[in-house]
Amino acid sequence: MLRFLRPGLSVKRWLLSVLFGSLFLLLFIVLAFGDEIQLAMGIIGRQLSALFQLSPQQYGGKLIAEILFFAVGLFLLVLGGKRLIAFLINALLPEKKGKIAALLSKSMNLGNAPNVVVIGGGTGLNSLLRGLKEHTNAITAIVSVADEGSHSRKIRNEFGLLPPGDIRNCIVALSDSGPLMAKLLEYRFSEGKELKGHNVGNLLIAALSRITGSFEKGVEETGKILAIRGRVLPVSLGTTHLCAELENGKLIREEPNVEEHKTKHQSEIKRLFLDPAVQAYKPSLDAIKDADVIVIGPGSLYTSILPLRL
Image 1 (cartoon, rainbow, N blue to C red):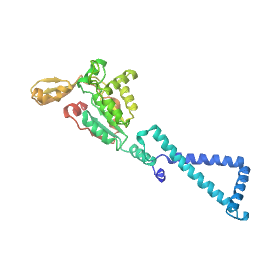
Image 2 (cartoon, one colour):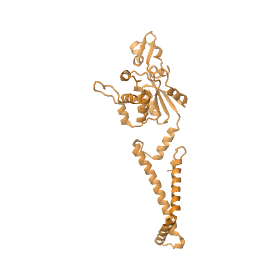
Image 3 (cartoon, helix red, strand yellow):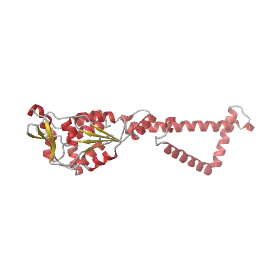
Image 4 (spheres, rainbow, N blue to C red):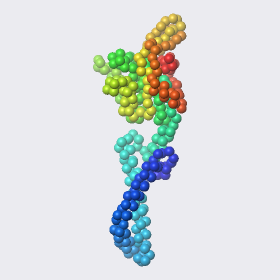
């Protein structure tokens, strides 16, 4: 229980509020029913004096009664408060079962940790985010929107939305909703004509984008549903394609082709650019300005890292 008194937990003020509230209510009871309480204590004191063979002049029975009431009251207050908080945590956040003070201490440490911005895309960024969320809640993942994988491209073409694949992966990595929800979001339909190959998480982001009226709002609401630590932002809201000029003079378009420039075209990249050029998303720029630490996520140099700088 002493761990609740540690600095920074932001719980002592509420404990004091409960304590003073209880004190004022107790004073009200004493002022309103003081005579009745005094009479009852006298009766209890005489009974305890007789039980312990104490003379009334010694007032021993009254002292024993006072100690007994104090000890029982304090015990019930501590036990009830602890069990009530544990019950609420287990009922509302079953995945966070554990010692209450330890949970509050961990929450305080994560909340006071540095503000970290992670820039990148692809699977490397996901692994980095899973590790970082154990050390801070102040995480902003700024994700490339140049992904044109087969199913992200389908959603992009059919719904007119930004590709959700890399953004979905970051949301799953930062989620505290449990492993089953993560598996659900990563589930890909393996049969059916229309749904085959589609990912549940991508469809969820697409649906929420339609419901909320914008892609960025859909991503934000997806993060809330999945209880992510931090936030996930696109680097831009503009629809664009990653393009490259190779040393042999050939121009290639779309992220998968750029990624395979060596195997398909046997040439190195001379220049990388976006077509059309797009503006950076302002909240992403603001997050970078306010960051304590900026991390360039691991991933493909040409398709995950450099597109964020173009």
